[in-house]
Length: 102
Image (cartoon, rainbow, N blue to C red; front, side, top):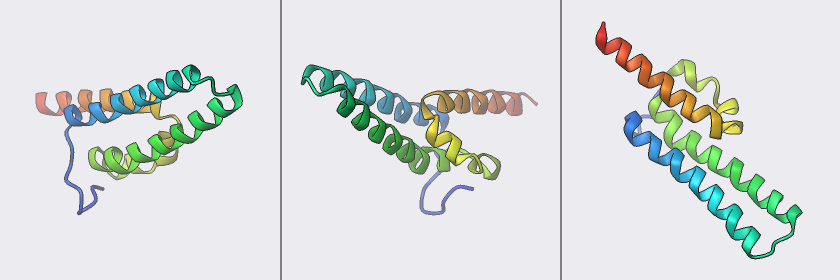
């Protein structure tokens, strides 16, 4: 269900959020390596940002593009966001094409 305070978002507008999160995570990884941060610290920092970005996507994107059924899978979407968001967007796009064609 779309939150009444937030307007629904189209799939075309949802993709940039995902791409920005992936690019940010990759850039952070490269930055930390170039700064000579220890492997353990790199892993810890990336893990924290990984979950923060997953939650950010969950609150700002998932709520705005999904219906009640998909809102039940928030935990999985948060944990596996690098894989689950492209699958979600492609599935929703296919459903929209199928629905418009009917």
